[in-house]
Image 1 (tube, one colour):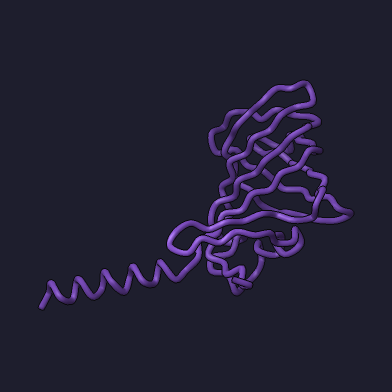
Image 2: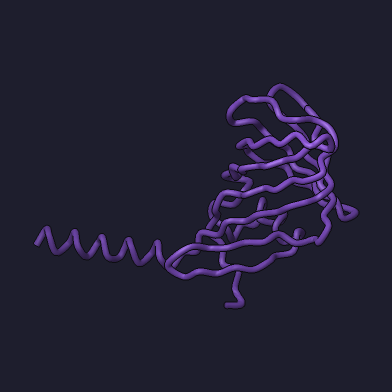
Length: 154
């Protein structure tokens, strides 16, 4: 009986994880600025060239698409998403190239986004404590942690 119960619980657990989409997001920009704002914290400002953020999911159901930057920013406070990004700030793998051509990769925690006048600003907290390149950037790509979200439309 115990073995049957364990198999049933394992099956239901797998089914519940399969039905919840873990969505990963990525955003890129060819125009950005990073400024130090405190110990191990920075402000990243990006010109929102397209005004969209791309997303994708992995197995079992693969999905891909775009979401408006405004909708993406709302995920920090959307009470329908449990946990939302305000409750559990996303870790972000960031790749940046300075105007001088220097390349850097880092992992940061992103919080407090603002969006106005086709520009988005994020607050970055360093996870590995290695300083970021500061100044003007000619290429930035952000790969956001996953979040349980249903993009719909599929």
